[in-house]
Amino acid sequence: MTKLKYYNDKDPWMLAEDIPDMDFFFSDIWITCFVNEFKYPSGRAYKKVLGIYKGFHLWFYFGEKDSKEFGDHLVNKFLKNPEFTKKINSQIIVEADKLRNFSEKLPEENLAKLSNKKLWEIYNKHDEIHTHYYQWCWIPVAVDMFHNNLTEKLKQYLRSIDVPENKINEYLVTLTQPTKKSLIQIEQEEFLQIAIEISKIPEQRKLFSDYFKLLKKQAMLKLELNIHTPEYEEFLENKMTDLASRIDRNILKKIEKHYQKYFYVKFM
Image (spheres, rainbow, N blue to C red):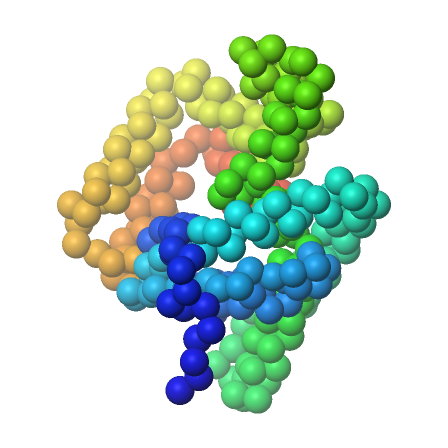
């Protein structure tokens, strides 16, 4: 058995995330990337990541000291080489486009007829492209993910130019505000416009409110159905079919149009 070099070192494990509904194949892409491919272009990788699975439930951990040192490493790289941050921003778009283009070409029908060799080719290519995506796209996250490395560095700078302590957070928020709305914010605002229209029609408002309460009740495990099972999928499909049949036609068209435009945002 391969000896795990950092498993029992003196760096304590720190819970990174507790995800109750996670696909193993997908999580393996970024977990292995963090300790392997992340070395390029970051200059170094995390020394260790630990994943614990129970069914679809995932707990994954980083070394507390290691993750702090890695965040500091990225902050210093940003400060010493501003061109690196520009390269990250441009490469994120490149890698995201590659992943999206690949996904759009995947077969959606008759998958059962594909050979194991063909299926493996799809999985293997997906792993390769998605790994490249995480090599670049996770850098801005990792720089401030667990220990506020970048945030603390910016606060240190504000203190160095004599910004009063009671104004540090206020100035930091102002300086880090985006110059334009994000895609997610735009999507939410457009969806809220549909919600406002629904709220103005009493029977439609009651319909959505009742269904929300029903689904929330099932989510509280009143109904003993496990996700990713045919029983659960059938239950959800029946409820959504019933709901769709009772939604005002104009509102339903707007919801469907919104979904077609923004369905991929939920995966971000």
